[in-house]
Length: 337
Ligand code: TYM
Image (tube, rainbow, N blue to C red):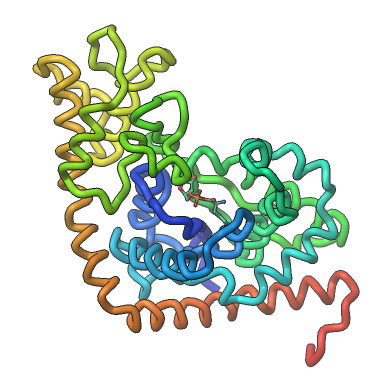
């Protein structure tokens, strides 16, 4: 067996993939793909926890797959697949539901935020973190590279894995660690630097930079970005300077420069106008080749389906036997075991 660390992460196919997804997650997945055993999943079952248009969901699932390859994931190095293509995820989620106390789910802040925005809250929305826990632990993942907003869900995953191990008296599940990047873990909205950049607000002009935005739109969004009246271009934890801090954080995450070098790049800037244009330029340059890759991939849906079929086969080979073993441990009869 390989002694390489196992990595699992996922993203929902709900459209509007943005700079936060790229810097908080995708870029780090790509950077580490040679070092580890990687599973990256388009989590379509998670998307169903709020109402979706069926045709749009199918389109977004292929579109997100294309984005993941376009940003640099190599399907020959990583296992890239769609969650619903592998039976272990939905099936194993039921088994985990039966060891997870309800109170743990009611405490999830993302559930509380999302539920507050829904007229009628679906059972799946509450159960969302259990499905996510299964995604991770059915692959014996050691590491879960995510943005800051998913940290609580990964901690719950650890609790669920520990509880199962405790209840059934063995080290059946690996207890995973969240891996959160130093910068880019929480890219904030350009229009409101105190709220995270999110897919659900990405339709609001000037909130997000979507990976599909053209250069003019990107420049316009950055030019309108909210800043402050301090007039100082420096990293800061002061909430009143969150806008400038966010712009510098984006620049740092894109360029991989040190904090000092980032600030030095703007030492001669004539105010925030120069800062905004400088950040927009590095973002536009970074995104342009990704968009070219994306457009090429979307012109070949048969190739995308081939990649996903290969990914599903590789993923199923790991997680389906894990869930069968779990059934056995829990006292179910597994046919042909
Ligand atoms: P999702 O689809 O909301 O986001 C995908 C990834 O993008 C990160 N992210 C951000 N990072 C920095 N700044 C932001 N503004 C920002 N917005 C989003 C997220 O942290 C995430 O890493 N529940 C997950 C999907 C999931 C999953 C999993 C993740 C399902 N199963 C198993 C890891 C492991 C979600 O909705 O991500």
